[in-house]
Image: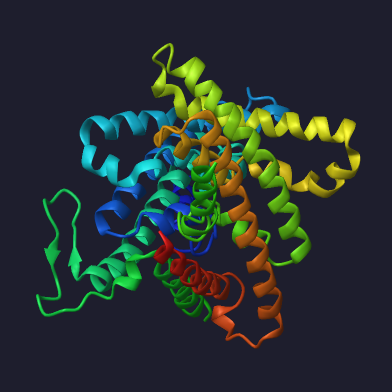
Length: 203
Length: 191
């Protein structure tokens, strides 16, 4: 039992890491990875929603009628997204402004609904909690990796979460490769990272 | 009249929802492998997005704003969209079976298409009037359809090419989308 909970947790970190292994939730991945702070903030917000909705849906899995289950899941998820939104508005206002409409859009992030449907609706509370936490942390790590790459090369700086102001990494003489922080760079970076992950995965 | 045309052009090209605003990328990658599914999805999105844009605007202006319930916006919008999609599906099935046969399987997918929810939220944030909200909803949907259909054409050719193994499927799709995004980026010069 204990072992399987650990397995559910660790699979989210490598074997099913979103958005590389599970190709879901591309929109936030592309949109918020302009700076490391945004990426990590988005990852944490999504993790919170994922864990809470997984736990609640797993608790309610025998109560929710099969025919209206998707609507029920969406309401549960939307509730937690509203919690996150209000919390960030109160305690992380600059980040709230930066992320903009992508905070309410966690509702339609396919990862959250996907885990609710594929995992939490069929499993007990603790495995669901571990699954949500694992996938959420995996997602945060992916966002952090992508945004670190894009920010260092695109702006030459790095904004760490919880630390004021960007840190200049590559020195003043560096010419920012600003293509990377614009939309086309986002698509290409994600495509190339997916390629690297595929290469690493194939043994 | 002129300003509405300008608004529409900026929504279709300059701020293209898929390639510039990063919304609706899951169906963009999912259904763009074949031209037929891409056109079906594009039409379904145009159909639902215009209706969703109009209804959420009304809900926001006459229910949420009046009673000071802005904090329920996310919940209200997603419920409106989900029930609208369900309703449209039932209506088409009963009254226009030919259209249902074309759009049928794409309708349920639209609930979790973030382009729909995203446009409704953008309309509220930019404080558009009802008419402007209608125009932007339609124009964003057309932009979505345009990018999706163009990209489906590209992907049908990519299948014929010899792509390195790790790059196959979604990875090369994303790189291709990056190229298209670069082309749409040129429209920024117009603004």
